[in-house]
Each structure stands twice: as structure tokens, then as C-alpha cells.
Length: 132
Ligand SMILES: [Zn+2]
Image (tube, rainbow, N blue to C red; front, side, top):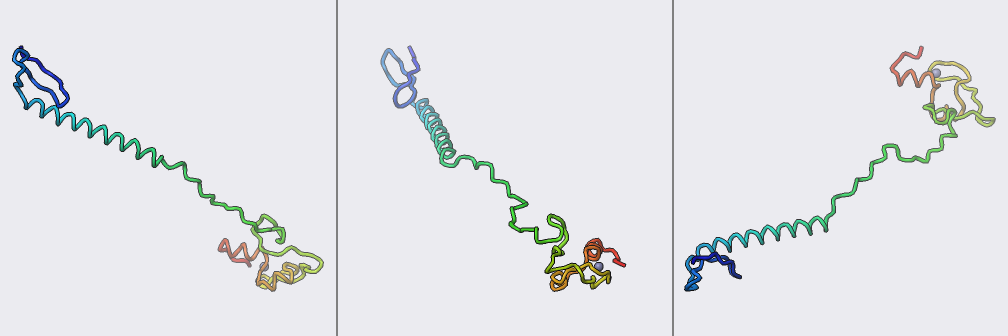
């Protein structure tokens, strides 16, 4: 009676009557199969460890496109606005004409020192319009 025997070193075809090894080739195939299986297991294990060591990157922190700037805009005539003109005060009265359009009482001395012009003129330049 020929029997398929799975042993420590592979699979064999044996004649149980004589206990003779009939086919070694099968054992070799089994060894290769087993090695392949072990290889797959090792690869799977390595892959698993790799994932443990290198967990997927957490969500990257979104870049804040508007980082808090500590600019205190209260010093400007229009805090929170686009005007760069300085706020008028007793020591800084808005009593000077705009150097561009000549309208009086448009600028403070600080504005003039900084080379500013009135809002209307700077807006006109920004929008590419003729201020006159
Ligand atoms: Zn002006």
C-alpha cells in the first residue's frame, strides 16, 4: 500500500508494507513549498514590524496661511483697514495737504515724514487709476 506521508523533512511517498521510500522528488518539492511559505511568513512579519516601527504619518499640521502677526494696527488711522496713514492726534494733526492731489488737511506730519499720500491717491495707484 502506497501512502503519502508528511514528515519532519517533507512529504514522502512510502510503501507502508516495506516502509521503503518510493519518491524523494516529492519531498524536495515540499521543501521548496515550505521554504516559500516560510519566506512569505517572514516577509509578512517584516512588513508588519516595518509598519509598527514606522506608523503612517499623522495628518500634517496645516500650514497657517495667516500666522498671527502682532502688528498693532491701532496706530493707524483705520485700524484693520488698508490705509497706512497715521491716526491724527493733538501732537500729530491732520493739517497737511496731499503731495499728489494737493487736497488740504489730508496728511499728518508723520504721514508726510513717511512719504505717504492721501488714501484716495494711494488707492488710485493700487487700482491703476488716474487720481485726478
Ligand atoms: Zn491725494
